[in-house]
Length: 382
Image 1 (cartoon, rainbow, N blue to C red):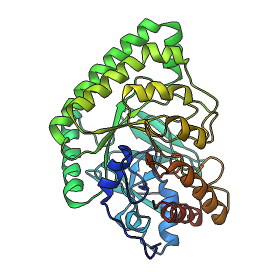
Image 2: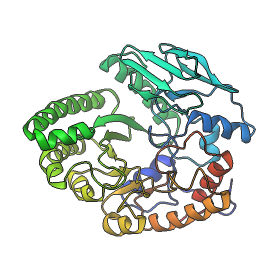
Image 3: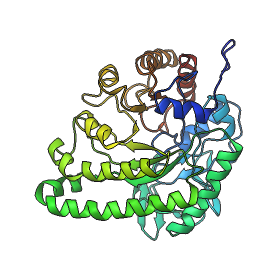
Image 4: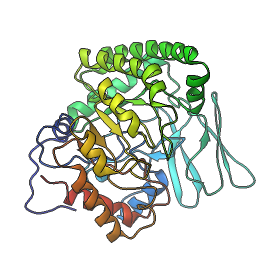
């Protein structure tokens, strides 16, 4: 997947940062796995490595809920990926065989048991999760598998961040801060108890500021971006009204972004699935630099319209391939055409990092994954 006659003139880190700042770059940056919504299922990753003739002996499942794999250096090189996951390896790990030929390195602290019907149960002090027989991810709690309190956890991440910064040219990101909107229950609170919702966000804001200040102390020299979680959208629209978002969430988001930008050169990504067009003006005005995953299959999320309306003001990180309707079921040639068309829409003027919409699911054929990244790279050049 090397194309003759094209020469990269920037490091990966320069390429991504310039893209976010809407400065000239040699090509569109490519991401796979810098964030737990830009990654790949460990099952699909195993199949991909097997198809490419690469070893499957040391696949690390780095997100035990979504069952995501850490993307290894050989795949990063082959697919011209400009990013790398910050999260360090598990301190202790063990081998888990969920079924068939699949074997993954998982954190040793997790208790995994199989039920009579073939389902798997994952147990941690925070609670249980369940994967049905033949499933690709767990449903339930999102525990801290590092089993570390905040400060030692940040120390552990800081060591990894320093290594990435000094020994690679890749862009990396720290997950995750709260985006002042959590779920449908909070959306209901915004309507029925707005004062209570504001108080909850005040508490969340204190935690965000405290955690970011700790990040500044521990690893600000090594981290390129932070991510805030704020899943605002359903398939058809926002979970809350724009007015309630403006009153209850936006002021805290703006204050947090101002704090980050006033004290660092760290970029801010907001992750929000769904149809979020009505919230994007608030997100931009608050000071968010990047939106992910850009769910182009949702209502009012047409790529051309989004690019025309907001392309000069924010970076779209995602939207490069429709995982909901295209990546899993279309032919490789259809996927190449699909990706080419999307890259041509997103890339003019910068402000676009290629990534599929959310994670590559476990049932996506390796040929389709290869086709997607070949098309992304081939059409990335300015």
